[in-house]
Length: 118
Image (tube, one colour):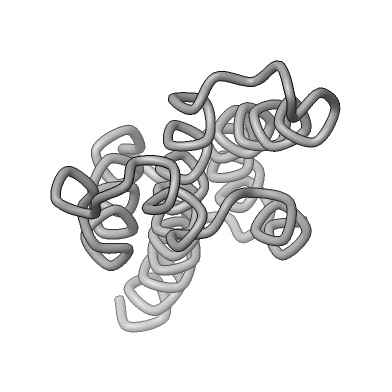
């Protein structure tokens, strides 16, 4: 699903051409790190049960995914009527989503490893 959103969303080149500069646009790595950090801050007390942990992380990740889908779809439905700011916001949201997915996977695996060690 994330791959499809990435394909639908504007890329950095598109956003820079709309802004006519890249001075105000953080690098993709920074945007992804922001999403990673933000996601980690939103989850706490992860369940140790495999299924419950996955469900918990999914419940926190799903709203971010849904929002990014809505934003990307709005760009493709009526591109002539979409303000430039929407392209920038969608690009940032998708880059944050990539980081959030990495955080979710790290949290999922980290708890599993910690549980196996104890």
